[in-house]
Amino acid sequence: MARIKLELPSRFAFETALTVRVTDLNYGNHLGNDALLGLLHEARTRFLASLGLLELPAEGVGILMVDCAIVYKAQGHLADELIISVGAGEFTRTGCDLFYRVDRDGVELARAKTGIVFFDHRAQAVRPVPEGFRSRFS
Image (cartoon, rainbow, N blue to C red; front, side, top):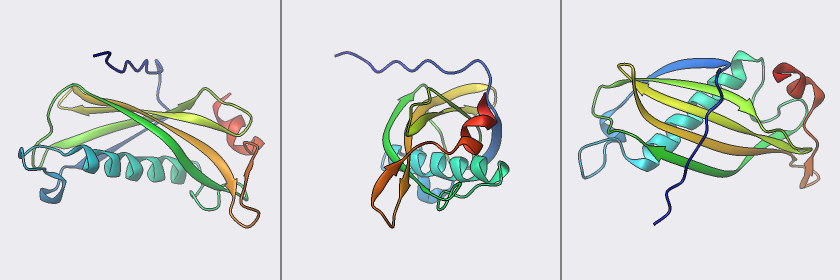
């Protein structure tokens, strides 16, 4: 079986700390994959807020997540403090990828990528990346 490989950027624009809650555990008593995606979503909203943006609207349009990939490196457990680093890259005309590195006590727990596009909910149409957003990463 071929494994997903994710190359991360050498630098991240943002970092935040989140704690693994009891509701984040699965039947194996470790951080569940669905819960990690929720934690990445929280990190993404904090990252955007640090730029003065909201997911809806961001620069006049909303943001939709169109894909995601997560590669697990280690298990997370109850009360672990996770440091989630977030950065943007691989811009296209209508979106970009957000990259995440999840660490616990200096050990990489997971790495992830979510693809986002900018979307006008009223018109139900994809829109170009707002220049104000793109320029923050050039």
